[in-house]
Amino acid sequence: MTNPKGPMEALNSAMAPPHADISCEILVIGGGPAGSTIATLLAERGRNVVLLEKATHPRFHIGESLLPLNLPLFEQLGVREEIERIGMVKFGVEFVSPWHGDPVTLDFANAWDKAFPYAYQVRRSDFDHILFKNAVAKGAVAHEGCKVTGIEFHTGAGATVTAVDEAQITRQFRTQFVVDASGRDTFLANHFGIKKRDKKHNSAAIFGHFSGATRLAGKAEGHISIFWFDHGWFWFIPLSDGATSIGAVCWPYYMKSRKTDPAQFFLDTIALCPALVERLKDAQLISPVTATGNYSYTASRTAGQNYLLLGDAFAFIDPVFSSGVFLAMNSAFIGADTVAACLDTPQQAARALKAFDATMRRGPKIFSWFIYRVTTPTLRDLFLRPSNFFRLEEAMLSLLAGDIFRGTPLGLRLLVFKAVYYFNNLIHLKQSLTAWKKRKRAIRDLETVAITGQEI
Ligand SMILES: Cc1cc2nc3c(=O)[nH]c(=O)nc-3n(C[C@H](O)[C@H](O)[C@H](O)COP(=O)(O)OP(=O)(O)OC[C@H]3O[C@@H](n4cnc5c(N)ncnc54)[C@H](O)[C@@H]3O)c2cc1C
Image (cartoon, rainbow, N blue to C red; front, side, top):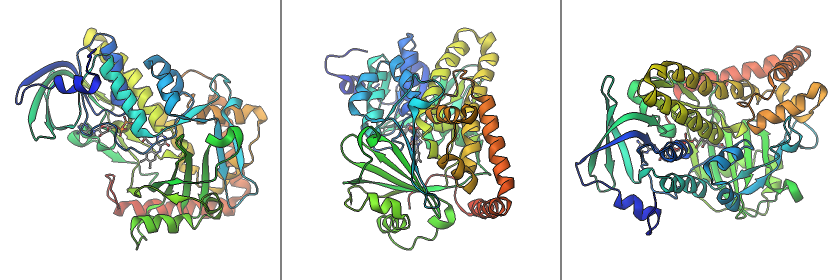
């Protein structure tokens, strides 16, 4: 879509009159990374795409650390240079544990495939805005401040989607295909009642931005740091404007112990991690503190005859490996091919949807094995004493880079890594059993926590 007034004016001029029926081929719910990406890809192919976003960009979103395998996706979308301008280059990861000696840093340059040596840390408000504007520039008709509130599927004939804008005007969109990219709002999973919490994992997060945090030196300045502490772990994400994003991901029993306001609770939580306190000794909190409740879930379906679920609208896993944005955007790339196959060759739709389903489940499955164990002493030991025996470190770095969809031969190495993990558990049986019991108690606690994201 070209418009001499610029993309935002283009959005407004594209708004239909109140109560009008609007027809499109594909309607995308949500203009985050997944929604904007699929809208771009389908519009580029000449599809008639409508993209509805309830907020107005630029808007705050958490999830600021990207993976190296995001970069080829930016290239294909044509936004790599713009992302580079707003991003802090992230060459690797630092692990800091109070139960071990010196911190360990790992560089993506040492991964199995050396072609993806870095990623970016980004302010999501800027990043998501770039992706959204790109969708408009490529021809998607986008409406911001427009919240999808209802949907009715018509057997074999698409759906009618109802949305309300900020002036409380209701519009109905007739579409052949619906893409749900509504993130943790999980619009379709709620509609169908198919959202299932992850029984094997449960955690919650509290986070804010600081100025004046002490960063690593030189090339490691943009590394993400992970600090373990008694009740979970912290992220430390340096942003290019000098701010640093800090967040604590904790078991719910700890979050429920809060007796003070969120900001004080956050500062008290940081005080429990001396290594992080040291890095923040000259720092100041410069943003409101936000918390997100119990947040691991999967929808039991990824798609149906005339709809798909992308990114967080399908599944959300703990963010310890910064995988969310990559999985969301990757799902949009696979999703674009799937939608095209469903619309152009309906006789091949079943096969395309099956392949889509397998890809959607692959990422969460691979990362979840590590997520379930990342707070155990045995996995911490393996991360903090890395060894490249049998190229295990290279394989782990490729996993951390998001290199799990291109056929890089990690399978055998990850299997060996898991065998080493189980073997070490046996050697330190007492310690492992204690950690396992602690984790079991923490997970049981989830029964009392609501499934939806919540602010505290
Ligand atoms: C505490 C925390 C830390 C995280 N850290 C990281 C990290 O470091 N790195 C990383 O990669 N990921 C991280 N994530 C995960 C990451 O934020 C998500 O995986 C990612 O944003 C998913 O993208 P998405 O497009 O699927 O959903 P979103 O980015 O959530 O986008 C969904 C969009 O849909 C809109 N929407 C919702 N409902 C409607 C509706 N009814 N109508 C219209 N629009 C609607 C929303 O406003 C939003 O803009 C983190 C998540 C949390 C909770």
